[in-house]
Image: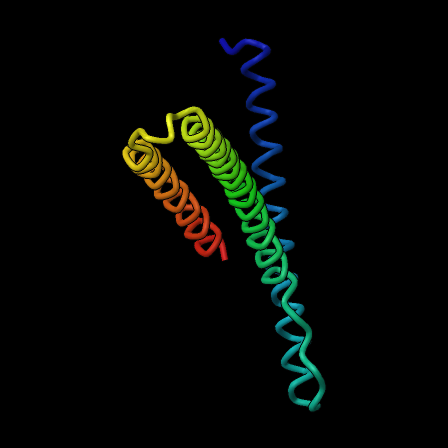
Length: 147
C-alpha cells in the first residue's frame, strides 16, 4: 500500500511531466509560427524575424561566458596583486642592501679593501634584481595571456 508521501510524489511527478510536455509543445509552436512568418516575409521581400528560441540559447551562452570571464578577471587581478606585492618586497630588500653597502663603505678604513665589500654587495643586489626581473616577466606574461 502506498503512503501519502508516495502518492503526493507521484502527483508532483505527473504535474512536472505535464509541465515539461506543455513547455516542449509551446516551443515547437513558437518555432513553427516563426518559421511560417519568416517564409511569408521572405516571399514578400520583407525582413525575417529572429528565432526567439535561438536568441534565448545565445543569451544563455553569453551569460555563462560572462560568468566565466568574471572568474578569470578575478583570478588575474589576484595574481597581479600577488606579483606586485612580491616586486615591492623585493625592491624594499634591494633598498636595504644599498643602504647596507653605503653604511659599510662609510665605516670602513680608507685603506681597507673596499672593492671586495662593494663586489660582494653588488653581486647580492644583482641576484635580487634578476629575481625582480623574473617577477616582472611573469606579470607581463600573465597580462598578455589575459588579453
